[in-house]
Image 1 (tube, rainbow, N blue to C red):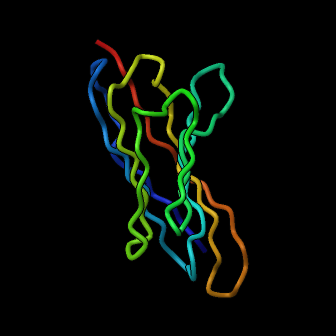
Image 2: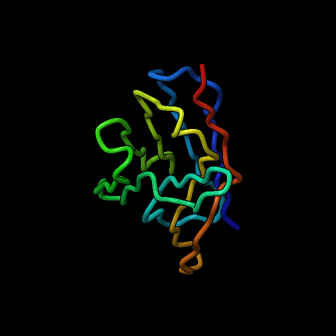
Amino acid sequence: QVQLVESGGGLVQPGGSLRLSCAASGSISTVRLMGWYRQAPGKKRELVASITNSRMTNYGDSVKGRFTISRDNAKNTAYLQMNSLKPEDTAVYLCNAEIISIGGILVGSWGQGTQVTVSS
């Protein structure tokens, strides 16, 4: 069993910053890929950023230059530093991970989501 727990969401003014965390726990051998997605009401879920266990990163076009994803492999934790936030960044942010379990099974896992609201 694998679990992802997100934290760090909240309300912030336009131009402000937030840092999200996503910690993976459970029967884990390797966390291959960790990523953040977001979903706003009435919109499709979209990739925000992802990072491999060798720290190769990928970003959605709308957040390039403003958001930074990083990870601590020893803690199986990914972070999303969000700067210069805009109202259109308002969404539920969900953590996703590709995990190889101790039993050697590849598992895709989602967190429960954390709300980010950018408003004055």
